Amino acid sequence: MRTRHKIGLLLLTSTAMIAPAAAQQGQPNPNQVAGKAILQAADAAIGASKVHSYVASSTGWRGYPGQQFAQGDLPRTDLKSNVSSIDFDGKSAKTEYVRVQGNNIPRGGGAGFPVQGEQQFAEFVNSDIAWNLNPQGQPVRQLATEAGDRQLAIWTNPIGFIKAGLAAPNAAATDHYYGRTNRTVKVVAYSVKVCDGPQPQCTRRLTGEFNNDNMLERVIAWVPDPVLGDKMVEYRWSDYRDVGNGVKYPFRLHAHMGDHPLIPGGHNYLDLRTQDVKINAADAAQAVPDAVRNAPVPTQTNVVSTQLAPGTYLVAGGSHNSVAVEFKDFVTVIEGPLSNQRTNAVVAEVHKLFPNKPIRYLVNTHNHFDHLGGVRGFVAEGATVITDDRNRNFYQQVVLAPQQRTLQFDRLSQRPFAPTGPGTLELQTFTDHYTISDGNQIIELYHVDGLNHSDNMLIAYLPKEKIVVNADLYGPPPAGGNLANVSNNAVVLYRNLKRLKLDVSTHVPIHGNPGSNADFERIVGPVAARTPQQGDGG
Ligand SMILES: [Zn+2]
Ligand SMILES: [Zn+2]
Image (cartoon, rainbow, N blue to C red; front, side, top):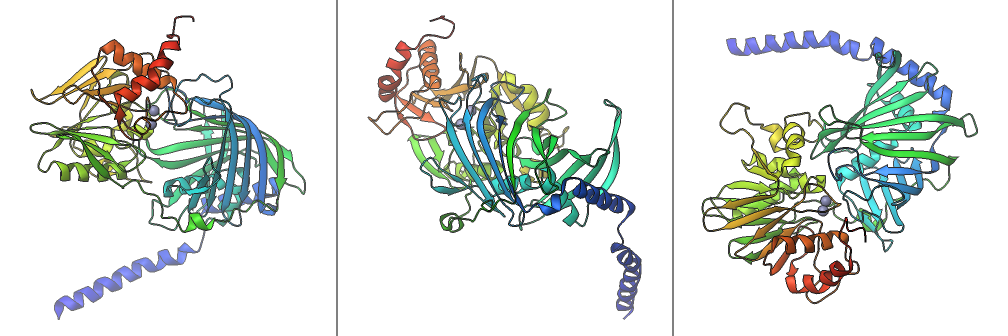
């Protein structure tokens, strides 16, 4: 009886304490009042509320995050055209663009880079469903994270920012003084939902900076990234012009993606100059095609493993492969691509293939984020990452460091190692050549010379099995087949194999299926023979 009485009292006390707070909840605080006032003034200035949709046609250039040749700014292509359709009411959008290499340095990675001729893209979102058109014009559903990024982009232009801010219950304003430019801007901050799934993964926070004329100059938002954690995207809007009916639109956009206090320099992502804007265009809304709506949401967890040689397995089933190699007391995995989600699936498979053996080493072929996104999960598993010495600072200070991952936590961020404990993370780097061996099984790692794709690329060679593993250099056709196009990367692989005098019988790519060295010699050999060596001046 006494206990019960006590509980009742406690409940009563807590209710009494909550009551005044609840009464205040309906009352906006002074920062929220200020936020509303700025957003209303900004709405009056550019007529955001009158805009239900728009179609903007622009030209400019675009950078490719996570595909740098070396640390520094992003590789770039020109945008011959970029048509952005946004339907605010239906939360749908379409971006169609045509990219060309232009005068941009053809160094760096990503599918189809460097660009030969013109390449067309069409990317869509409707609420939390994203899809692209493939080269055959068929719609293909994209990852949920992609949908989140595209949904967020609806709200990071001035019209969207003002509309979403006016609708957000938590929009609040503060002044921010920038010492470098000696000026104060009014910063409005709020969060917006990009999907109906769990929080906080479906919530994105944004800030917008307004000048004294209540024009939005800059929007900063954060997106989840497997490599960088919470990744900053910055949009600078300018050159506002009248586009009719009291609506003003910014004809210039300059954007950065992935700027980071520990990574030197800016990461230029997008630069657009708009030629034409149609407000409230009839065809701006994007309906989800049935084929997309009925398609399963793509995941990165499908795993299919096949034996390449005794103790050596290809772990495939997705866009990027890994290779698992058994040693006496441990396993080495070559490549931890994509994401934490992918790594969890690969690790589970490796443990099934080799029960009771720890994964001691994770070999990372190069710095591109699609090949790097899963390494944190391997470090959480206890593995040491082996990579080129050029990656040391970036991996140590940024990729593997504890930092904010509020939008998409992973195994390493949830359970980071105590920095002085027994399990500190390890990174093993090399410049030309590195050997993993237990006296019986051997993996040789070699730096790839003369490559434009990345300055820190390695190939892995298993001398006993005569297998060479490459990323982004050569994807074999079906046995006896041909390739539509022999890339310069394949020629560089050919020259490196000759330089290193490696005796190869099987090529195992990170993208695609293994193939024979006979096919490689037949397909790439003649192209290499007639391609001048870099620096030959020929
Ligand atoms: Zn790459
Ligand atoms: Zn790749």
